[in-house]
Length: 255
Image (cartoon, rainbow, N blue to C red; front, side, top):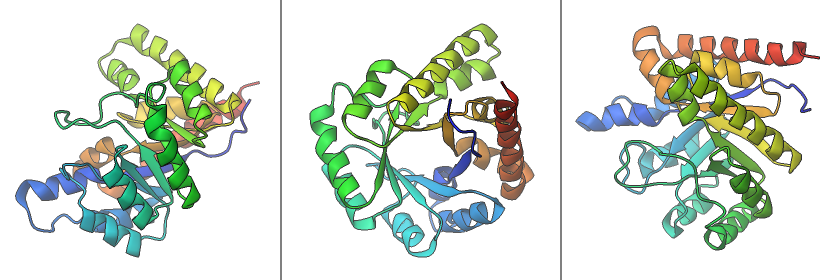
């Protein structure tokens, strides 16, 4: 059983840049969002520098690295270009994710087991540079085993399918998918990996997954930015922290 420490919250600010890019210019500024998120209680900032630069841009990365003291988690594809950018920027963490030009957002987890030759040197170079590497993967035992073999210290479990089922009221499907996540978290911890989770999380799902003592960090973006339009960034982050604390308290109360 993992120690039930508080769950960290990483706030993904990609979609602040999405809104900015819809019109051009510099407003709203992702850097300002990063400052506001930290002030509201975020433990870290997450950004995804995609190959097509559809939201976060290189200048955003450079300014955030220069001005934000909180840990930065840089999501990136497994390419030479992105490796070079990450080695130069030296964020606290780099999460390697799958990426397709035709997708609206990240669809599914990284194929680790079938891409060891590609991923191994990338993980080694980032680790040697002092960047903590995580792999964004499905709650699949084969992928988790491969992540451990590659000596990536962290995995981030893709929670998208579970969150979608929960949102659509498919309680049976959601419960089945949640059990896959629970089993994956247990397996990963047993292999010495730190376990994070993200994609599609909201108040309810963030609370439930925080009850898994193996989970150490949640990365949430789209829900936060969307709800902030109505409630404000500080309110949404505060409510998420409360939900996560309730979930963790439930884990601590179990025998």
